[in-house]
Amino acid sequence: MTDPVGKPSASRRDFLMSTAAVAAGTALSHLGSVANVHAAGDDVIKVGLVGCGGRGTGAAEQSINSSTNVKLHAMGDLFADHLNGSLDKLKQFGDRVDVADDRKFIGMDAYKKVIDSGVDLVILATPPGFRPGHIKAVIEAGKNLFCEKPVAVDGPGIRTVLAAAEMAKKKGLAVVAGTQRRHQAGYVEVMKRIHDGSIGDLVTSQVYWNQGGLWKVDRTPSMSDMEYQIRNWLYYTWLSGDHICEQHVHNLDVMNWAFGTHPVRCVALGGRQVRTSPIYGNIYDHFAVEYEFPGNKITSSQCRQIDGCANNVSETIVGTKGTYHLSPGNYRLTGGSGGRIRIPNERNPYEQEHIDLVLSIREGKPLMELQTVAESTLTAIMGRMSAYTGQAVTWEQALNSKLDLTPKSFDFSGPFPCPPIAMPGETPFV
Image (cartoon, rainbow, N blue to C red; front, side, top):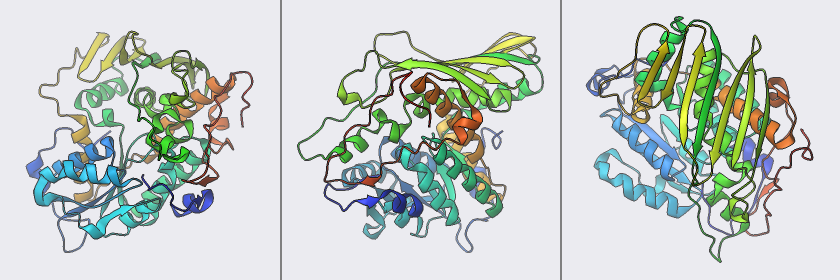
């Protein structure tokens, strides 16, 4: 998303209201030979990119590389410098990038213009706070979708996405999410074995995303409060959902995938111990959560963004007969049956998810990942809610929460103070 400072503000409601994978390792040559099912009389899949930051640019590259007849057709962002910088990087693909000047859109309504520009597939890579309204608009327009994770930052957003998932199923649309482990050959094989009983009945799991700090954008004199927060979206809960939602959702998704369902309740703690400067907005720098799955199965999760600490990005899935220790490219089994999984020359899952998406469109067997990513996102949201309030939170409470983090208006000229930092024991559950 992007917009020059001084654009007229849009009302919150106006903005929102207007706003197992396919076989791993599919050969690219096969994609080019599949009969067209997506657009009558035209074998080229036209892609529109909404959100032209680093992740959006990477997703566009991976989409272009998924098949010889996929082209980038339109681009939209809130900020012109994001769009222009992204386009400069993508020009390396030559005529695979066919974005005429009249298909470059800037501003709060750029996503609508991309959707209406004649594209077959939309990539959504804006800050997560904008995603529910954008997803709804893409599905209502009957377009196939690749959406980055997470897909919302609060309960109302999740409800919007779940309704969009039902609409997409009825329309026969393909939707793939940025939970790329579901397209990584090793993870796919591990989950097949787990669900086939190779480690017995699942007992518990431990999932982690502990790492150092991330990037930030320095403020310039011309930046309004709104622009500064959107450019530093990681650090504002209304935009990112906090890092438990924006980043740790990957591990939580693996946890849900293994158990074949979502947790029913959680108790969490967290805080803001090191990143206390106002430049880090209002998010926490660490969380620890106990999730309860059906059958009183208790699992644990940790995530942290603090420099100088031990890093750990992994998942451990424990069964009655064995344990899988997982991290991208490393799949170790203790006990159980089937032995260690070795995937020679495992394809980059960020590429594989786009290959699988395009293949599903061409073969008329659309992948549908919107419900699972919404459930994994809500798993993260309920953990954040518990940590912020200091209360136990159930799945139903999180799903039906009335807490809507969306600003009442998007004003790029007036003041927009940083929302308050949650204080456990004081912040109420809404």
